[in-house]
Image 1 (cartoon, helix red, strand yellow):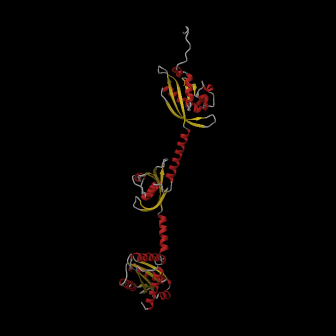
Image 2 (cartoon, rainbow, N blue to C red):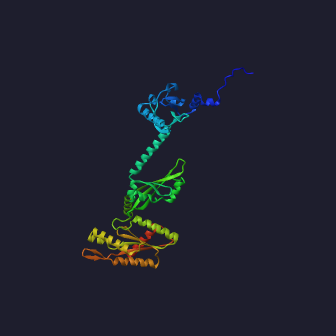
Image 3 (spheres, rainbow, N blue to C red):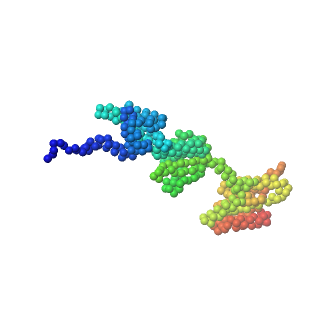
Length: 419
């Protein structure tokens, strides 16, 4: 039987949930700083994380305002956010730099939400902060990197472009516009000259970049040679994202190289191929003769009376004679034939697809053209003749050295016989 009085009952679960103690336990379990303020913007309570960040006990912070905790300019900013949330009755989200007790600065994303009673009256604020310093630093670093890239990109002395995987320009710099003669809008409407084989290797991960020299037609129809360098940008997941391309005008360098090749392969006096270049052409012709059974003829010409001409009229006249013979021989052969100055007063001719009677007819034709083309000397003129050695090349052709030796022997035989 129960006595007349009733035993005290423990508080219900619902009552415990509504108690301040239970709420404080919940707040203390959270790893983000949380505070509750009254209508006078004073701290009513705050969680363990907030107190830890302030390096204070919770009891020391209750009843204080932001002006008691933070330097003036920071406190004023926090107070403005609090008042806006309280006065508008709506949540306010901000990002603020927050000074730490150790003097460092961290960035917090704050949410301030108004607290309302049963009648809807705002009687306080709850504030939640999230430390986003790492994200802000990462965003700042990315922004700085993008700014540096933009500066380098736009001020680069060579043309640069970002190219989509579809091959179209995405971004171009000023130097590229100057190089191509197109403005930015025109370029962005065009496709970049990607090389399909190389880009396939890029996408497959076989190479990290490639370089190619290409001929490019500018907007004004002028042709320029450019060195194109292309690399592939991948995402953090190693997926292809876009291409970075560089285009550098190398027209001047190509012209210099062409001039050097011209000097290296041609005789300075006559402009004909020189000995080294002719030997290359002869080796290639001999290879075709052996492999495909082609026929060809090799002629070696030695000018008659050249020493006497030099002795009587001087070296300048001798040089004029050599240039005269070079012009005559070049005009007497087919476009596919090779004419070269072998050295001194000797010339060589290589003519493909000739043999038999055609070869001898060709020799007679060259001799006749020389005799029918006299050169001027002072007020008069003199005919120029040459002794011509002939060697027919076929599928049994030996080396270039052997062929030239045979032509030399043939030429001396012709000179001895007066031909």
